[in-house]
Length: 421
Ligand code: NIG
Ligand code: FE
Image (cartoon, rainbow, N blue to C red; front, top):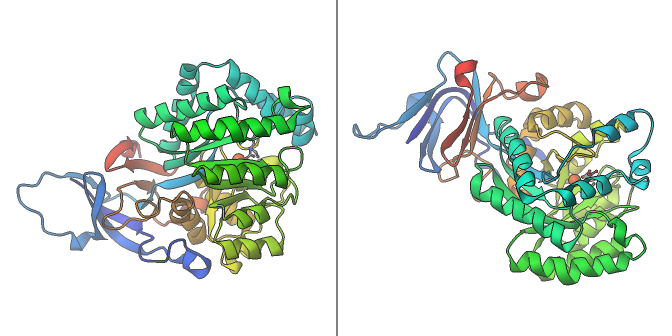
């Protein structure tokens, strides 16, 4: 058993509707000077330190005591949109962009996703495993306990399957929980530049069936965008995926008003992600379909366009909003969810409470995991992070440092920096 006690604030997020929408995004269920009792991989009790239940004298406890420290406990972050399987960085593109080249220009000249595809195809499974593992440790040490992870830098049957095999291997040997998504429709690979429809057939006829046969993914995602996949192409791929039993996600309206959000609503996708260029009618459509709007402010921050998704309008309309990093080597090379809270607040005018809700319970809902993850209450899985702060609002307010000192995944302490604080 593990007992956490004298925690200045526990952000439980317990009790509200799931997903949280509108005003309920602000209800954090905070317990001051709290305690949490964990048995195995489950939370068995949450309350104030003075109310800790009397224990059998024989029971052995490991205790983590926050007395004299300032600690805020919250559910481990759920990063519901990442692209973590790649073989190398694209730092030279970063430099080029700062000299005035756009993302689209770089892609047209053979950079962008195509550059990552070339690197990934040349890499072995072991090389990819080693690289991803390093990033996965960083996720855990920054307070993320679950990620959604996409393939999408292989873009051939062999290399998409290779990427998903890497994710499957990582699931077995890593504490970080991984929800795999197949994203063969991330771009048209160079060898199919003159035969797009052939590549789309390859996705539908070969990749999706094999992914499903081998149980390699739970979701299918498409980059529905000018220069990538049209609405019609995206629809045919996603319908095939749905038919095969995969859940749906869409990269929607990221660079232009491309119609992705509308398609997500039409197909009943679990999430529509990015959404920088959606309009009011799209927001209504998302509201009607119950699709989660997953906002990725790190990608906008890093692009320098200042064109953030309309978070306030989405929340006002009652659309469930989640926050994620979009961790990838092209548009957003960070895996720090604490930074997303800061961007969400300062740039999209979300409150700290809304941002934390979006990064935890609504992220869990976006992955279909909210029965087990995303809140701190009895029966839920013990995925808990302790932040070096006395008030949850310090997470976005005091931005740019790593507040996370303890990460607990399935009841196990996997990161402990407490001694060092
Ligand atoms: O989410 N939009 C598509 N995919 C990534 C970028 C991928 C890349 O440039 O490597 C994104 O922004
Ligand atoms: Fe993305």
